[in-house]
Length: 116
Image 1: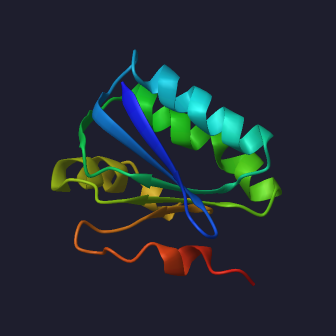
Image 2: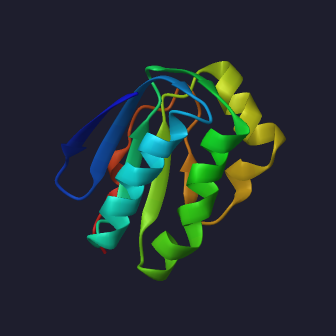
């Protein structure tokens, strides 16, 4: 799986391409792990090119929430397709602290990373 990484002013954007399944989620997990280990805990994941997410893909995000929160970070997911957004909503993942899941229409990400 290709995962583009772009350093923004106050956060890092990861842009995975394709299906986020049991095989490809390992690559995303490694990317996030390296960011967290480096103290880069303001993380945005752009889903605009993700076509499918499995439970393994969902698990990647859930597994880092406590560690990101303990370091004062935030995980923001954007540009989810309607189907992927519905999966997060049905499972109640949109109600977890430190995991912000933007609606498919919402485009402004930077406001969630404004330095305090």
